[in-house]
Image 1 (cartoon, each protein chain N blue to C red):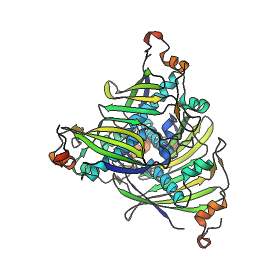
Image 2 (image 1 turned 90 degrees about the vertical axis):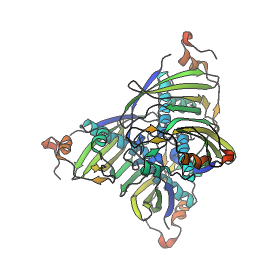
Image 3 (image 1 turned 120 degrees about the vertical axis):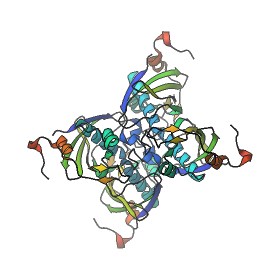
Image 4 (image 1 turned 180 degrees about the vertical axis):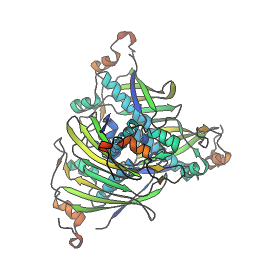
Length: 142
Length: 142
Length: 142
Length: 142
């Protein structure tokens, strides 16, 4: 499995009075990059949610900031599902501007059933697992 | 009926690289002030939505900006339901910092039924109308 | 002069608990579309601000909402500078999803000098005016 | 030193189409809680930035999510400066709704000079250190 690339432009509204990006936006971009990653692997989260009431809420997220971003910077995120546990995905994200390392982080997300009002984490189906780790050669055994 | 006061502090994340508030935030604050206004008149929108699947989506919103806002400014909004038509509320908002006029705007919101998937504007019940214009003396006939 | 097209995908974070887009985001998108519009006409706002301390803060913005947007909808905005007055641009925006009319609005922005701490609107230079209304045939006389 | 309490109401715009809070907002609230914490200890960040061009950008932030938040929930954050290193603050945050544990996280922020265009982390002055760890009895030696 290879990292998936998600590109974006820093918008005016992403900056703060210090002239650099306001930090919660990095988590917004990790969220967008994860949705993009799932789409690329055949799971459009909008359809998952509409058709099966399945979603991917967060258990944990961390980001380390290496170099600031500015308005109209062209940025890309390299995202990869690093591990799949019973109910949980671990997704890693690396932010780059050209060759400059901007930030890196991860998200832990639970495969979650929203059909009964109260969200409930459930086991990730084999078919979903295979969409990410279908190639035995690079499949991580957990 | 008197205007209802909603107070807030400008947060760091509300500013942009020009050092002033990023303009879409004024609409965020009008939205918050409207929810506060409905709560004060006995209609907590969270309960309306949970219990009756009724909401108040926007048909139109406008704001005029008179004087910029800065980080940690103490601001208040004076909000009032100016008119109630068959399915629609017209809400006016005035932003002030001390005596300084900051901005003013309005929102047009439809009394909307979300129970059937597709949102549908419906007539505003008399009991809701009375919560805002109960005092005959200042009631606007439309 | 022809409208400039700005495309985007509705992100998960743009939605609210009613399942549709939270309305202040339309103003965020008008802001992004305006920056895109200025870039296309040769004025990258990030460079204007960095090199000349010129910016384009808002005097007024209005939007009318025709049809709701949902997560992962593919949307485009058609933006055009409708008028240029002495110190002010009037920019119109039309939101579409395929052939469906989603929303339309406008922004009034002042050509503003940020070099002296206090923002000050100044006359728009002829060279900037020409970048938008260079073709005499469709030039609006004000 | 005791934790400082920062209270807020979950706004409509903080929710997403799953009906719960969109996760980057927790980092927005950690940021607000940290600014509140610094104000309480005598350092209003708006004045620090305006008067001395000092700011507190992030090196790292992490949050773990225990229980979801909903529209109009009343939430508080308990925040504390856990450690002060040479150029860096470690701030811990605990989110609660009544007695329910909602989330907990930390931020690592650098004491940063913005006066020369390029942000530069510098040593934290003793007077600032004392504002947080003035009482020898609970002072952490690093």
